[in-house]
Image (cartoon, rainbow, N blue to C red; front, side, top):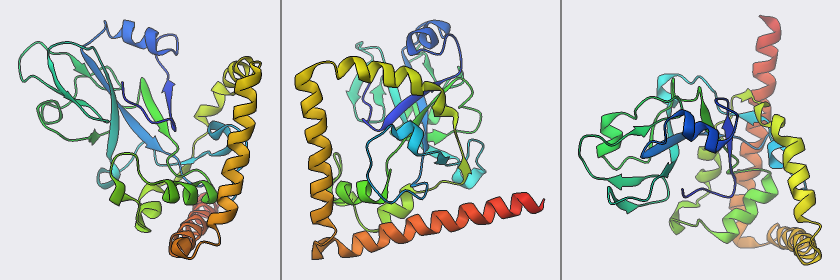
Length: 247
């Protein structure tokens, strides 16, 4: 499976683990999980902490048709049926008998299976498992991402990218359930002195680079767009909350 470092499984079925889910599906050839984008959530500053707890403002779990096509990430058996890998899904042989499931345990659409699309209509496909994708995080983290560049397509990070990736419309706190387990594992890893020092050094490097980028003339347009999108998110959230209160 090829997966971003900012993507996290949310598994409702079986025992809540990926091995348990795959066993429940009787170990198919592949499973394509729909992603769910989380937005800025009004967070301006980069801070140490779990993104799964800091960001709880996300795209809709039950989107309407025009917002239903979303990206996927796929776990697959390494077999001769796979012709090529890319970061979202493999290309597989077009033959009968290949079991390629979605996040609800159903087969993926044939058009997706035999084509090259990097996503599908997620409606009805989140019930067992999906991926929480924190592609923007805070405004400062987004600025750092613009400086770093995209890992796959270098020309993708333009000012409009922040608006395109910030599609949050509702509060989603489902990832909070993993907080205790994540912190326990992190505490175990940070018992290693070398890893602990590297962790703290990475945080300090992030903060130093962010401070420098805020005053870089080449990134001022990007920074202004990022802040504007974050403020638009806040305004939308307030509007939706007021609308909900009035109903």
